[in-house]
Image (cartoon, rainbow over all chains, first blue to last red; front, side, top):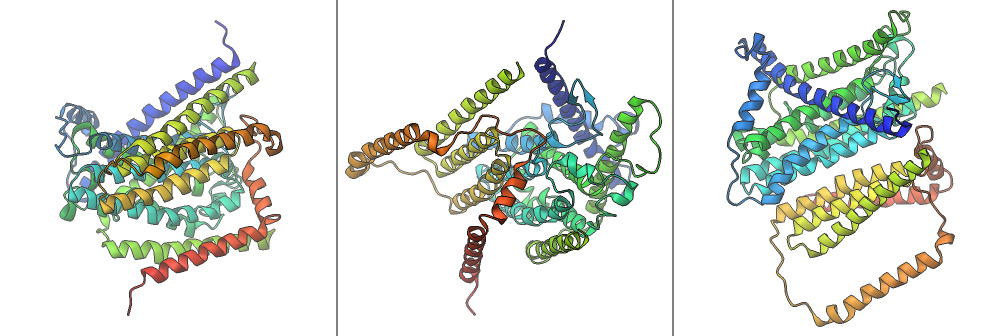
Length: 351
Length: 176
C-alpha cells in the first residue's frame, strides 16, 4: 500500500501522540510509587513492598482499586461542573507534554519523532495551558458545595495566580539568551561546551532557575507550598468530595504537572536532551544509539528533578499562608525582575 | 496536493471554532447561573485564540489565552464564587428592552456586516494558515513594531497600567 505524504504525517503523528500519552501516564503512575518508596526510606521504613518484586506492581493495584471504588456524588453538588472539573485538571496537565522535545532532532519521513508538535511559541503554550488548569481547581472547590473544598480551591487558585507571575518572569532570562520561545531553539542555544553551556552554569541563569523551581513547586501545589491540601486544616482541600476515578484524575493531574515542570526545568536550564559531555566527546556508536542516547539523558535529568520534588516534600515543613504570599510577591517577583535586568545588561554589554 | 489539504484543514478549524465561539456566546446570554455564563465567555475567548492562531498570529493567540482566559476570567470566576451569586431571576423585562433592544441589535448586526462586506478590501486580506511555519516567528515582528513605530502609545499604555496598579494599592491599603 502506498501512502501519500499527508497520510504518513497523520499516521506518524497519531502513533507519536499515543506513545507519548502512554509513557506519560506510566511515568505518572511510577512517580507515585517512587514518591512512596523514597519518602518511606527517608522516614526509615520500607514503603510499598508487597505487590510484585520490590512493590513494582503497586501502581497497577492502586489503579484497579481506584477504578473499582464506588463513585460517590453528594446531593447538593453542581453536577455538570463537578464532573467537568477533574477532566479539565487532567486534560490541561497532559496536554502540555505535547510541545516538549524529549530527544535530539530525528526525522522519519520528514516528521520529527521525538516531539509531538514543534510550535514557535512552545514556552507560551505551556504557560497558557498551566493558567487554564486553574479552572479545574477553582471549579472543583466551588461545585462541591463544601466549605473546606471552597477554602482549599480559593487557596490553590490564588497561590497559582500569584506564583504564575514569578514563574513567567524567571523564564525571561532564558528566552533572552535563546532569542526564541521555541523549545527546540532554546535547547539548541545551550549546545557547544557540554554542561558548561547549559543555561544553569554557562548562562548564569541559576538565579532564574531557583526562582523557577520555587514558583513551580507552588504552582503544582506541592510541599512546602501544599496549603490547598493542608489536611490538618482543610480535610483534603479542593478534592474532599471526590472519590474513585474523579479523585484519581486530580491525583494524576498533580503528578503530570510535576512531570511537566521537571521537563521544562530540564529544557530551559539544563540543556534538554543534550548530554553533559556533548561537544567534548566524539559521537560514537551506530545511528540508533545516537538517536536513543539523548532520550536517556533527558529522562535522567527529569528523574533527578522528580527526585528533588520528593526530597523537598520529605524535608521541609509547610508554609503559613501569609508567609507564602509575601514570599511570592515581595521576594520572588522582585528577584525575577532583577534577574531580567541583570541578564539583559550583561547581554547588551557583551554584544 | 499538500496545499489543498492545508486549506481544507484550516477551513475545518475555522468552521469548528467559529461555530463554537458563536454557540458559547449565545450560551453566555441564555444561561441563568453567572458562573456558567462566565465559563461560556472563557470558551469564547479560547475559540477566538484558535482563530487567531489559524490566521498565523501565534503570539496574539497565546496572549489571548494567558491574559484573558488565564487571568481576567479567573478573576471573574473568583468574584462570582466569593460572592456566591445565585441563579438570576427572570423578569418579564422592561418594555424598552424589547422595543429598542432587539431591533437595535439587528440594526447593528446589519450595519457591521454591510461595512465588512462592502469595505472588506480596505481592511486587507489575511490567508488562512498565514505564516505558520517553523522558520518565521511573529514575535520579532511584533516587538520591532512595538519598540519603533508604536513606542509612544506603548509607553503611554504602560504608564496607564502603572497608575491603575497604584490606584489599586491605595484602595486596598488600610487606614492608619
